[in-house]
Image 1: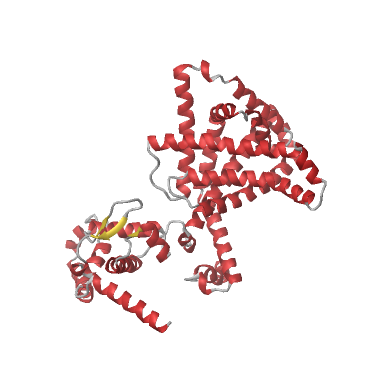
Image 2 (image 1 turned 30 degrees about the vertical axis):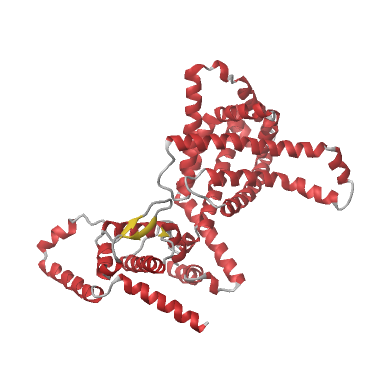
Amino acid sequence: MTGRLGNLTEPLYRHVWGTASLDELPPWRRWCVTFTRYVHVTLRDLGHGEISHRAASLSYTTLLSFVPLLAVGFSVLKGLGVHNELEPALLQILAPMGAQATGMAKTIVGFVDNMKVGVLGAAGIVMLLYTVVSTMKKIEGAFNYSWRVKSARTLTQGFRDYLIVLIVGPVLVFSAVGITGAGASNSFLLYLSSLQPFGTLLEWLSRLAPYLMIIGTFTFLYMFMPNTRVRATSAVFGGVVAGILWQTAGWGFARFVAGSTQYAAVYSAFAGLVIFFVWIYLAWLILLIGANIAFYHQHPEHLCMYRREPRLSLREREALALCVVKLLASNHYAGRPAWDIPALARTLMIPQPCVEEVMSALEQAGIVARGAGRPHPWLPARPLETISLAEVMKAVRSAREEGLVTARLAQHPDIATLLLSSEEAAAAVYAPRMVRELATTAAATHSSAGRES
């Protein structure tokens, strides 16, 4: 059975992951391969478990910090005069809970109204801010995981960016709800709705309004929450996917709640809280899935990898190192801007962690150096005429060595002699050639291709 399954999946694997360049495929097949890759990476990351664990953690955190977060947002809305839209917005967010939504929204609004910031005192305000900031840091950590970002914001950066999100986010959401409600009672729009084709157009816009509101909110979060630069197109793409999933999941969850009569008998008075917790978990899961989709849209090189964490063989690392120094040398001699790691990853269609690993090895060997700027441009650390390809290969092969195996080779002199002979043979091939030759070869190839065209 395993052999037959392998025979069935091997052609699929070859067609989806064996294609080096999608530009060579017909449009219909390119779309199918790209769609299949998105589905695979999404299911693969969900199966890994980290996203669902973070969604569950954020759901628990939401129960503890939902009221403080809303209290801060409510203070901003009250200053702008749109605080009356808090309950309608909550009703839209909690709508999939069915009959439980109205009671839950009123309870939350009652908690927020009863929270008087002025009577909390200094210690109470500090605890309120700590709860809000710690919650935002946990949300940022979940987004950073999706975006493969290793470092979080500093305290100063976090306080500034979190304040922007807490001020702008609620204003966007609740203002959108207010505009939707005002449009339904506006006399001019009511008059237009009686005329065709404006009536049909307004009806479609009213149906699309919840989608647009959710998509806009998700897009805003995807652009500002990760500690990295997110392109607007990628944020919108992730927001659209997450918005569609949100509305679809909301529809299915509402049908489940309406059709299930046993949960109330099992959980009794806690039924509403259980339903609320499940919906919050699904909401966070959808939000993190959208963040993943936005990441893969901005970094399509990761779509080419079957595994989430790419693992390069020694031969692949050596080939990647040669490609990197070739590109660096070509730009250096042509007077073009220096390469940075994101640009190298996009050009070579190799995930950034792999490029970072190779660049780190070359930096430790004194072959390349970081320049000033963000992201860091990479420059030759010394004249390229003095760097042999043998140095490049040695830097990659000996990267992160701790000497444990080398120390044991003294007990096996025959193995040590064999490895030394292999290294000498490789050095005989690479030592006479300098990095400059790669740049010269690349320039000659480009010029001949230009003459042929």
